[in-house]
Amino acid sequence: KLDERIEMQEAKVEKLKAMKQAYLHEMFPAEGETVPKRRFRGFSGEWKENKLGDITSINTGDSDVKDADEDGEYPFFIRSEIVQRSNKYTFDGEAILIPGEGRLGEIFHYIKGKFDYHQRVYKISDFDEKVDGKFIYFSMHKSFKDHAMKYTVKSTVNSLRLPMLTEYEVKIPSLKEQAKIGKFFKNLDEKIAMQEAKVEKLKAMKSAYLNEMFV
Image (cartoon, rainbow, N blue to C red):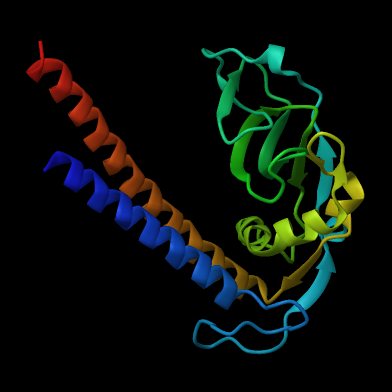
């Protein structure tokens, strides 16, 4: 029964993730188009194309993996989904962080506050007044992987270069619509995280019962 509960909970997580992907494709314009298929009521007009480098500041960090400290005060973004800790911060503000090699277009971090970041991690920050950082974050979820894989530099792993980010085209509606879209996907991410936490809780419960009910 416990296994069945875990499977059911995992199915809920997958359903929410599939829903998110469907909304990403419907609520952002497809390639070659300037309006999305699905839109919040009250918004109209074409979205305007902007190069990411024209509306943000983009650079890499100075830190190395050896700078990580599990008891560090600040988040430390490395070339992984896992966020480590650091005793120093090298930036304080709103930013999107993505690794410069490996699983391009699959790993994104968003933060507001103090943090450190690896020398092969790109920081996208200092957003233009006409753009919402959270909107840019979810827009990149939608289409950056396809863009990156077209221009990736291959060695032993896929590698990202600065022009691939600065030249990336972002379609942008009004600031008010951006904020509404960003909030919608933020809430959806929170629901996914909550359901994933339930999966981990059930797995931990199962592990505890296994230890207690077998000699």
